[in-house]
Length: 104
Image 1 (cartoon, rainbow, N blue to C red):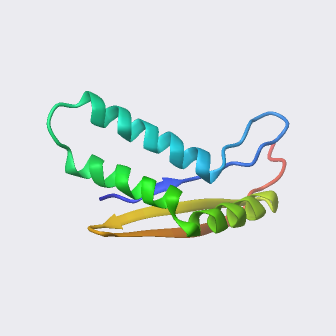
Image 2: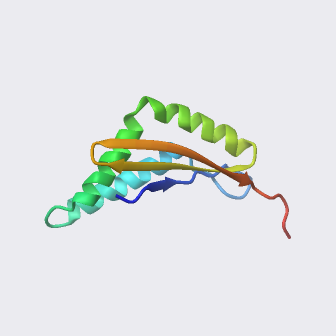
């Protein structure tokens, strides 16, 4: 399965942000809709759904959400990568460089 990258954004005066949990739930809903509308089984889609559900239910997700919010408030870009390889699901927080301010 290809990793699922959740890239939260911080709310500012012009654009509402999305937290890691909201993004994971959004991806989960999309997977569920696809599973319900497709005929036949799609093992990769089932694996993606299971990985996202596992992430949302894991004890690690709350800590990753808090850490992502803290880093976003410092102006850094953040990605939470959810990967699944068979029965093992992993969650990794990747921190990008500080977002540039200004830019006009």
